[in-house]
Length: 324
Image 1 (cartoon, rainbow, N blue to C red):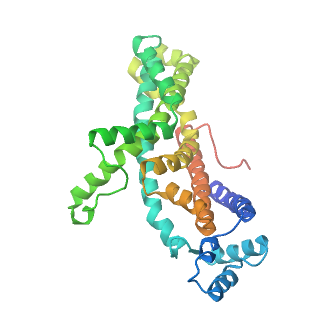
Image 2: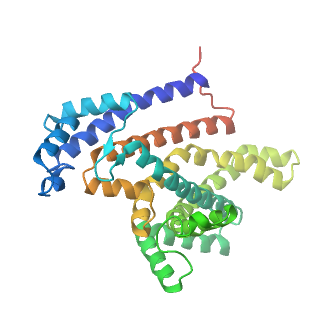
Image 3: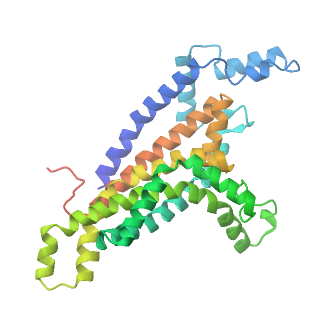
């Protein structure tokens, strides 16, 4: 298991190099750089702009700039954000917790609802519950996340039940510990709904199909012939086999939540990593964009690694070590 984890972590190195090289090349092809707005300001001395260009290597070809940036990253320096006037590591550290909390809440919310609904839809196949859940699932899949987020903003504006934007209230620092928890949870309700409802529909339909396939398997007839109770057959044998494909999709689901969080954070004004990346792209703050891309890619690989480990744990037939 340890050798497998090390091999997967080593594959992260060429993947990060390739992705950051591609992002760096694409940003270098865009007209201007992050100093373009500064050059338009008459009160900024030309010598200062020239010194910054030399420091960041902006007067050199893009591959030389990439080489300098890569050297700094290997020394633990992600660069400095010109747009936000702070080190990139500090900026990422301020935003990543908000996005991780939002993605985790949406993930728990969607899976906690989708899996029981998928199991019930399979057990009561062709019933009223199955048909209603199928209609609701198709309706949820057909609504884009940004459109759902816009609808939730309208709902919050009309009712006043939920805050319009932000991760905390103005008086957050003066609240008790319990008050701070409730305040954060209150601000997470709408982003979690916008990010999680679409996932509920897709996971529920996959779970229903897997559960139906497992119910028709031969080991189910064997378990019933041995006299096991129906509840044991369904929740110990059928559910365990039906959930394996979902476990393998864990990494993709988590990474898709992170990418989907970008649109939700922008529409709902949630101060997370996705909103930061969007603002950095508009301002051509390339060091922040590169750090955000590296972080997203790393979380994708780590999510898939966790999915492989969980799959091996849930299915003893799967072995992660190579045969000698």
